[in-house]
Picture 1 (spheres, rainbow, N blue to C red):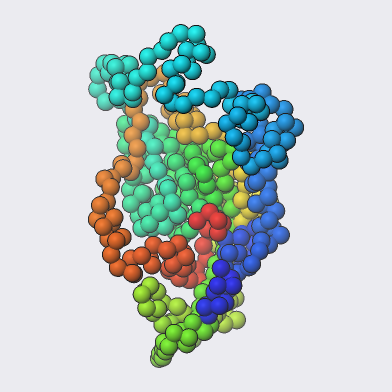
Picture 2: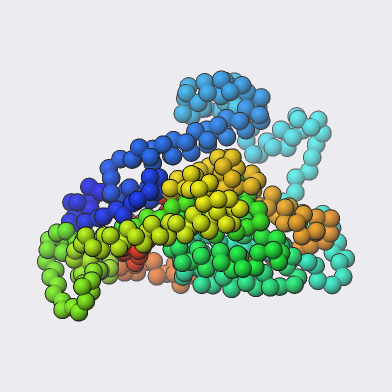
Length: 413
């Protein structure tokens, strides 16, 4: 977007002081920095090795044969898939009974999912079963959007204080965002640590603010290809260069105080966002740098506390660098590789429920589909513009304009 911003007259300043913290490169550069290229290539290599290992194990391939397949074509037709041993047989779904008979040497009756209820064991448990709470922290770390920290913290506190909930699994899938929102949840976990097992299950991404949510858990679990870490802070400042003048807007102001006009600017029509009239001054830039570096030091220190490591040990793997789950296991950011099922099993072990009756509850409970929001999307140009990814991202950055933040990566939002 750098060239686009230049063309439409919007200025952008990247407040970056840590090597791998690349969240804003899509607005400040036209290509990867060397540091960002390095960390992204490492993620690609790890994902390739994971696919190679699992496919070779499942299909009895050698690594060299897998590499040859990858470089021989980008897609395989059905007959080729059979000859190359990527698939075992050709059939339509209507022939599935014949396929089963071929491999099992006997006919099998197919049932639909509703018929599975008859196989459920009878519930003869008297009283209330002990519970494992799966608490979902999904989306950007924000107070009222994304993970909705203002509401989520109430669920976390309720789960921690409930006598019938014996362990908590916090499912984190978040690229970060507002440090305050992440810290609101993390601080509750820190204060209550030791009262009952808290297990974090990291999804596709648990980086920066997403890792902040994870750091005080008793056990952190990630998939091999989870994007984790990104312990770092970055900031930005978006401002007007020529856009205001080009579309005929003008502004004026009076002020009291040296920095009072920072952030003042015209409200752009249709999209309803205010674009500051000017960039940072040198004094303001020094203040912003101090804020970012202070927040970074605090972030590293908290991770060190949560992971029982020294500040220097965490600093060596911080600087905003993202890691795969596999690398996270090796460098101490992650304890176990696995998924949500692994997290639940560990929660059962730590709470002594492994061989007992138990119940899993999900928090927050899933709500009904909002038809009102669906109808609203059909009306009004402002609504349509607000749904555009660029406008949404621009609004988000302007909402936190000049504020230090721990987002993960521009490709992960």
